[in-house]
Amino acid sequence: MKIFHIVGARPNFMKVAPVLSALKKRDHVVQTLIHTGQHYDVNMSDVFFQQLGIPEPDVNLAVGSGSHAKQTAEIMVRLEPVVVERQPDMVLVYGDVNSTVATVLVCAKLGVRVGHVEAGLRSFDRTMPEEINRLVTDQLADLLFTPSEDGDENLRREGVSAEKIFFVGNVMIDSLVHLLPSAQKSKVDGLPERYALVTLHRPANVDDSATLKGILESLLEVNRDLAVVFPAHPRTRKRIADFGLNASQLRVLDPLPYVDFLGLQSRATVVITDSGGIQEETTYLGVPCLTVRENTERPITVTMGTNVLVGRDPEKLRAELSRVLNGKAKKGTVPPLWDGHTGDRIADILVKR
Ligand code: UD1
Image (cartoon, rainbow, N blue to C red; front, side, top):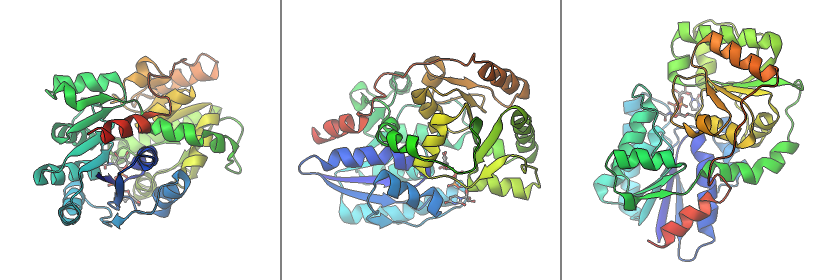
């Protein structure tokens, strides 16, 4: 069985690693890894491959950055001949990035079967580019691997037939479980004992100068009570510079490697983020998470986990932060099948096909 894995952006890498290694243990499976090149900086891509033990990609489409249409179209144009030439039996796509939707569009039209890992998540907010990617990907994919049962419900409601849907758990947690022991030993020099770990990169938060200014002002306020450690996505760093905003009192760092970032998360007093995956990682780790968004496609992190949506309301952020500082942070539990074995469950299903 010839299986392709297509990845492109940072959050894909911790999802592909467990599936690659689970399939490696199976007979008669030949795997090909394709990197679209959506993320290309060493600290957004190569370092993750090294730390997660992902082999060198067999093919790199080297598409780089661009508008959504340009990036998506470029991936499609460069991927199509590779799929036509190599004729995979199954193509696996991950998450909700432009590389995911571009691949599914190419494969669906070529009649090549696609499996979507992390299917069914919905924010119900179509202003998010990822929501468009999720909706299209799940309509076209043949196998849908969901991380939580709300995903199954969303898919059924959208008319996806039940036999395509497999509740397998959260594959990203496999990588976390695997690398947590090294993460706990890792150290980022020069940081205080107690800190708020911050990440921000959603276009809705960083692409508008007034919005980003408001969020940075809230973070400067947080910083008075608790040091803010802020590994900044290249997009965010660029926006802060372009808009001439002030983040000089915060500890702004370059994006960190997976293991170092996981170590920082596990020791953080609180995490403040607009990332999807970090809402899940903090839930697993039992670390309080304040999400700077009005909605989440990962509601289980709120209903079962440690996540609280604070939106962009400085009052709400202040109130939730003071709960954390007063030892009254929300407690959570780990959702079902977030157990480190999701890659194996996916591999079992694939080899039976
Ligand atoms: C993408 C995903 C988002 C995911 C995020 C994680 C889509 C629609 N978005 O957003 O879901 O949460 O990755 O990081 O696919 N850049 C660099 N170096 C890089 C990559 C990007 O400097 O290696 C800069 C460029 O200025 C680029 C910008 O970041 O224009 C945005 O990159 P892009 O891939 O378009 O989206 P992300 O914001 O990274």
